[in-house]
Image (cartoon, rainbow, N blue to C red; front, top):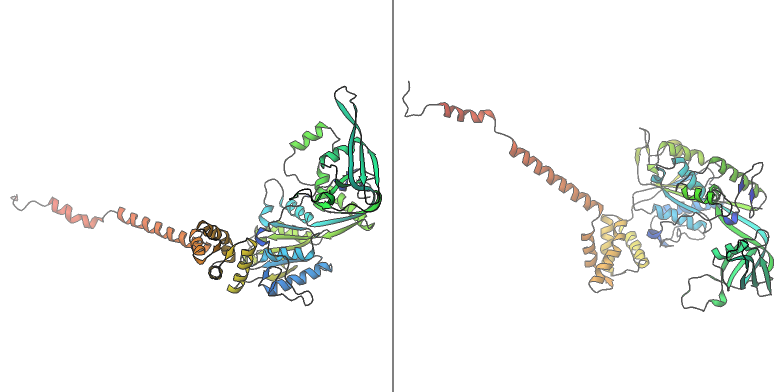
Length: 505
């Protein structure tokens, strides 16, 4: 069973328990797009709504992304990828995040920037493979014999330590209660370590697997929900049925979680050598292809048995023009693998050079890879779309603004960029608060735009300073040049000629 020890077929390698696998999911950079909840499409016609799910504008791109979502749900995206191409600040990252949200919370979404592959510790292909496997989920469904209920008693039974120092835990007595009854259990002392690590106490809802003895804390019983005004715990209802039952347990992990869990050295408890070796390990290590192939074989066998289900997620690679020919070649081969997520590229470049070659190509990508891509163009926002987006962002950041201030921000955004005006929201709010106001006015926006300039004005300032510096150098060189010899000749001749009152010989 996948919930117990994973034994390799025809191999001496033993994988760790899947219950001990910890998630390696990274926090997503969604602060700038927290207002985006989806693509904002009509549920029946799949047409882009003028305002939907926090999205404005880019109607054609959103409809194309909706078609991609339908292809992914119908499992017709094998061997393909998506490219979002457009100028900076046109919603490419927001569309990728919206695609992931349309697919559901349980679908893995792994964002990365292409420049992450250039590391002095790990090969480029290893970084790409790691992110590939982060974006592939494994949903494990098992029927397990468990003891589940609210903890009403938790007492460790102590005996004299055989070594003669202090006390030792002989067993643990625990009582569990459900709506239908209660039961007292006597547990092995090794289970007490897991109870202490999870900080389980009286009033918690837990379940204990009968076969492996694994303990998992589900949450706090909702009978204690009114104990405090503010709670930091998750409350769950008291379980129904008997304490001893057969329960279907669903666990979602990624293939990278399995890789990391099995790449760690599995020493015995109290083995100082294994602890020291883990401390001395470098922070970033590569996972061998042999281990990945063994994990894949176990996953394949459990998928064929119906125990597990593969959930392909989304791998979003921003600034893909930063990848070189070696990375593109690897991606082209990886897209054909059976373990491949949905890859979404994004770039703001047109025709540029492919890194590692002298060849010019569209978006800096090889032509053979471009042939596999479904390309979705994005276009620059107009003033009305910028106005709507800034208004929504102001609400998300709790910035109260006058209509005139919003209109002025839209004008600035039309002449500069959407990202610039969104970044001016919080400084404008702080300026208004310094003046004793809660509502941002046009004057606050103007002052913020003078304090923080956009990229165009910054480039203009740099160009002006460079021109002034060049003019000063030219003026300095002109003053340092000596007069020519022809101009100095009459002076020399005059000095050599005799005075008028001197007699000539």
